[in-house]
Amino acid sequence: METNAGLNGFNVSGRNPQTGVVVGFGPGYALFVSDNVALELTGKYRYGLAGGDINTFQQTLSLNVGVQIYLDKEKAKSVFKPK
Image (cartoon, rainbow, N blue to C red; front, side, top):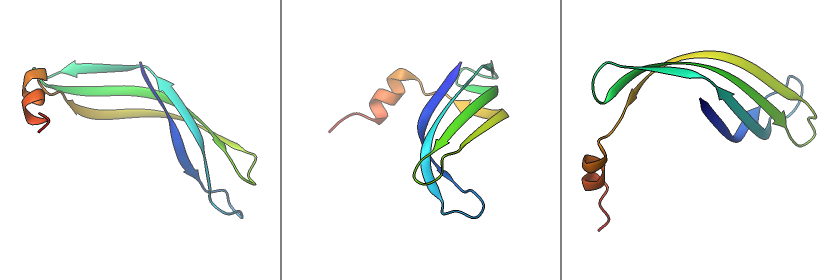
């Protein structure tokens, strides 16, 4: 399951662009092709509420394909070691 929340820009025809709040969630599947690399397939629902003078919302459904690279914990610690 993947979730997200944040700010997003909205463009509504005939009105000024606005910034609004967006939340999304959806299931996904990761197929590991090696120890650190996975191909991912996710389905996502997003709901956005525009602010300002635009009292409207946007809803989207999406199907996403991607590649994820996972860092080894010990290697990541050595790379991002505080000085």
